[in-house]
Image (cartoon, rainbow, N blue to C red; front, side, top):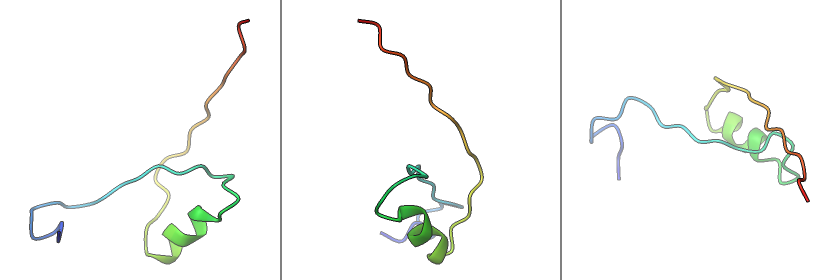
Length: 46
């Protein structure tokens, strides 16, 4: 579906910046830009 025709002004997604597949490069090459970065912390509790 054409998002613009449906009234969308933008589209977003999240991706693992360390992805071995190189996903960030793909999205940058498609004209997307990084607008946010965040860290996720984890601790085992067992």
